Length: 156
Image 1 (cartoon, rainbow, N blue to C red):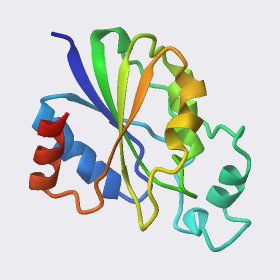
Image 2 (tube, rainbow, N blue to C red; image 1 turned 30 degrees about the vertical axis):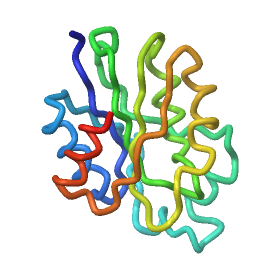
Image 3 (cartoon, rainbow, N blue to C red; image 1 turned 90 degrees about the horizontal axis):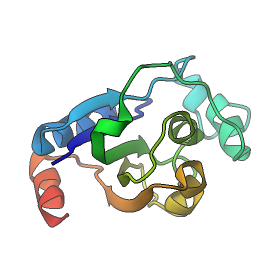
C-alpha cells in the first residue's frame, strides 16, 4: 500500500489546523506549501483590489513562488491537498505547487476552508496544472472538527 500525503497552503492558520487533523486521521505525512514571500494581513484584504491576493487572483496565469523543498512524490499514491478558497477557487499558489512536482498517476483529493463560498471551478482550474493526475473535489471543512474529518475520511 502506498503512503499518503497531506499537503496544504494556509495563509492564516485555519487550513493548517484542518490539514494536521486529516494527516493524523489517515496516518499521512504532512507537507506545507510555503510562499517565498509570506502573505501579510494587508496582502489578504480581498476588499482592496490592489492587495497582493486580489492582484494574483485577477490573473489566473500568475504563479506565486514557493519555497523549494525536497519531497519524493513517487512514494505517495494518494495526496490530500488543502487550501483556503479565494474568489471561489484555489489560490494560484496551488497551481504553482502542482506545476513544481510530478503528480503523474496520483489521486489528489481536495479539501478547503472558506468564509462562505464553495469549490466553484477549482477542479477544472487545477487540472491543467497536473494533467496526469486524477483530481477530485473533496470537502469544505470550515469547522474542522475531528468528528467532521473522521466522517469525511470514512466516506472516501
